[in-house]
Amino acid sequence: MRSQFEQWQSKIRIDKWRMTGVIATSVFLGTVWWYAGMLTTAITGTLLFAILRSTNKDVETSSNLSGIDLSGADLGGAELNGVDFRGSNLNGANLRGADLRGANLSGADLINADLSGADLNRAELRYANLSGADLASTNLSNADLRYANLSGADLKCTFLRGTNLSDANLSGALLFFINSREVLNLEPLQLEAQPSPLLCNVALPAYSKQPAVNPNRDCDRISELLRDRYDISIEEAQEIVDEARQHHWH
Image (cartoon, rainbow, N blue to C red; front, side, top):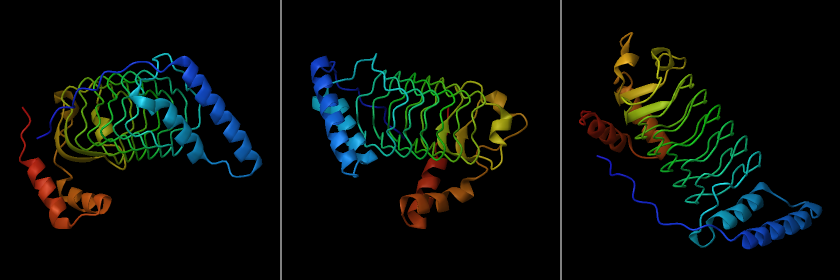
């Protein structure tokens, strides 16, 4: 039912001198706005986006943005391959469709962040706070999510091949139409957490079914959730659920 991700466009590194110039400009403008009492996080996010997205060039894999405050930043579709975001504040950030392959987001604050359709293949997300994050159709293949907080996260149609979920908090998360048979370290207790994650058409690893876990136990609740989340009619939402349930995992 789902097409594979398109191949990412070929990328080249950002010229270091250009990066330096843009950062210097950002610092100068930031200082002026601060003295004017009008500096906002949105300005910081917009300036950084210009750096990262400029002319579709890639950020060097050695780029270090650890500990930076990017809350609410608009980085949708940005090339962030291998960037170090350890401990950064990305609360509510727009990272929709971003290339975050191999990025280090360990301990990052990604509460309510939009990561839908992003590529996080082999990304480091240990201890990351993804509470309420939108991970719909996100590629989390081979990602390290040990001890991550995924409470209330939307994992609809998420790619989870080889994903390490050891001790991850899945309470209240939406697990809808996903194949988790090749997930690493998904324990039964994680699926029975309170509030329990919502399961509908989930292919579970054999070891996570003991004690028995019904992979369709919450299908009757999903349509209302989709209606409210995506502002669609209950009929449309029910059609989505019915179509998903017709798919049989092999």
